[in-house]
Image (cartoon, rainbow, N blue to C red):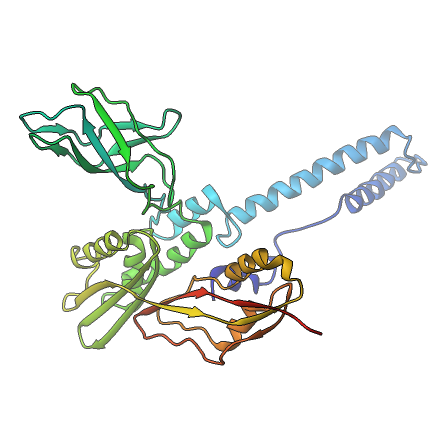
Length: 368
């Protein structure tokens, strides 16, 4: 159960006081009437009375103050706070945990000179490129064009924390003694966006296990998530004493992600139990193609229905978790679908596998 699902079950905090403006006006009107009575003033509320205008003004101010107080209280409750408030709370109460700010994606770029030279030339690390507008990118490592060659391919990093980007930064910004032509060989991939509030809070709770001195399962999960924000799921298996298998799922740059987790778990004495032999590897993908026969009410809406079916049958599966037949049918029974026919089989995976489902349906006109 996720943090969002768990917190949804909690009762509303009684410290948060919600009220309507009408009730506040009524209370303030009654109070004003009592104060007038103490001074022997016979007063009845009337909309045209200047006193009522003042009562309404201060009532709206009271409502705004109540909302501000509620907002400040929520900032001190991690499951209700967000953004900078959540960052400050978790940093203070979870031993300095900080939010992952994301990773910059990379792409292969071809660097070409106008004519071959008889000496090696180096395009330095940090060489700046631009899309001609606001986006910039940098060469990640020194790139050497060998003598007699016209081009070489280097890895360029986009100066933006995002999962993927189709922007092309082919304009040369850094000064260079040779005329260079730059070509993008692929789009930027392998990055990640800023960690969401829910992901950050989940990881903060998991961080409580990092104090384990016995190489606990949750401790290894925590350090794996900490190593790289592209880690989507972690499973820790130990079939033999002191042998620990850490399985990683990542949507992008899986080789780099596994390497980062391996370095974190095996390269730091603070994260590894003294006797454990830790192996880090990527989860094995189990690709399943579902070919159901789907009876549609409206055959003209096949394209939109297919897209909705793909959205409904999400591929956000955890490692070692299969998909029961009943859930498959439930996911396929969307608007415009009258009936679904599919072999009644559960999708089962091994403990180190992650399910990936694709859909190849046959649409048939439903007959009533």
